[in-house]
Image (cartoon, rainbow, N blue to C red; front, side, top):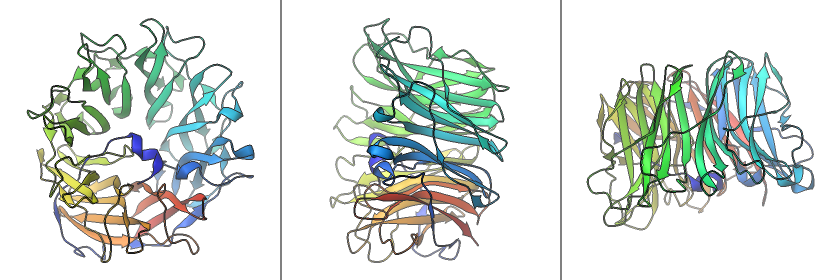
Length: 479
């Protein structure tokens, strides 16, 4: 799917896939269009990937739209008790350059009417992170986020990557920044809000023997208490090898990152990275990413932790895969766990016929299953290079909903929701787009699925509303 996802790798979901097995599991209402501030030229490349709901009908969605003069600007659509409000034109901190654009990087809503959005802006000389808070239903102006000591005073290039809030005033953010301490190295940072105040930002502590420039990438963070989190990503070691890492916060203290050992068939230059992570109470987590095998194939990989202890990374076995399946995780909530050791994941791969397909895989009672190909509706050509599984939510063990996209008989991308019941996946229904729109386009689709029970899920994404224009959509599923 979509332009914004191409930079982030994908994985897999698994179980038996039976066409039509759960065809009545969900009822899909026609999607409605999400408003944008005026004037606008639609979403920037269909970019509306972030959604967070504190409860059914109380959600926020963040992305980028093209505003006055065609500049990229941040937008937040939010609803209160099921009613969408006027969209928020994101205002970064003082000194930002509208001409250089604003990028949204996440949103998290711990309670109704209280959210924190994460973004990136540019001033005269620096690219910097900021937050934007909703307090009791009122959105505030953006506030600068402090970087660690050693960040460059000019020509800083900082990228916030993910945010999660476990309760009001208790949030965690991870990202990267540039320091001139080691020849302009890219380092990772973590910062936490505690009781409404942002604490001192800290630099990621890497394993020994790193590259002079470790090129750190922190992709996602998951927390189960205000002082208990796991972040994932990658760095480059002293041998110029990219290593997948996990870093844990224990008792409000961030520990040294741990490089995960890749599967036994990994290349000496495995290029490993983690792109997704999810955790449940108690520190049982699932991380997903990709690595290179000794043949050069890009394969999906997962790692599981139980009570904070990580097991060795495992290769996800793909069905009917090409010699190089070019596995991809989009990085937009493509992993989910209903309980410790019971999870689902999804992504995209290349099959032996040269077609791009979506794949699904499950972890059942701590055991990784063999991945299965996403079942598509009749007449579908393939998932396509910009299709496959993007987002997953699991309201119960063995019960999940995944958002995906595929190419129909007219070679147009169509959004799809597929459900799992009792560890059985089925092709469910395509999304009925607003008005007469017929396709989500190459840059749109289902970006986020968040379920509150086995039948009620909030779904958001973007679609092609004109020849070159994209708009956002939202829908709520029912029984």
